[in-house]
Length: 280
Figure 1 (cartoon, rainbow, N blue to C red):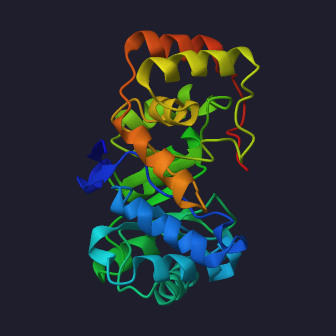
Figure 2: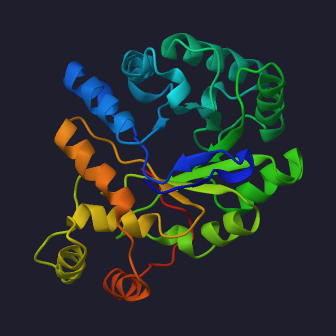
């Protein structure tokens, strides 16, 4: 499994991690087994949030990582409505209880909200000082919001920005990704398969994916994940509720696309410029 330093943390984190959005809605034991198999295969970056099932996803993660906490790079998120200074600290403590751990490797603001960023960042600093989190970051932040956060926190404080990123939604490449690369901020793409509506094999893009997959003796989904993690600042967190799907995702960490492959995918999936950063 390829790994890169995760922003300012300097921790080597696998480029393919495991997301848990809606994992609480599936068969619990299958989801736990899928997460555990992913950890076995090197997908140690496990991402969750208090929002997901109102803590139930964190409960699933807790069971999956029981006895293996030291193997995992664990991330959770605070909802914007809870992101006052006092509310952020309380939310983190709830997440720690759900996850049955003493600390998070990284804690994120889920998206910009009504509470002043100064309060949220002050809470992050307090949580980091007390050892309850080791780093903090943001999610769904556009460049203007990233610059505001940096102006409050100072340089080299934001560990990551988690954003929507898949082959048919590449808006982050215009401004967000270059900003993050210039400021040593990891970019974590969520929904890499577009919420399950993956590229049609009959489309031009699907045919390009198939040709590249055949060349690398890989699946089209593995090629997609390899493309979405093609630079040292890019990470992705596909969600899986089955062991076979997890194993397929993990094999993407060994796929090395060449420049010709990347150019072909760039052409097949052109970037659409947007005024606002898309989210789901």
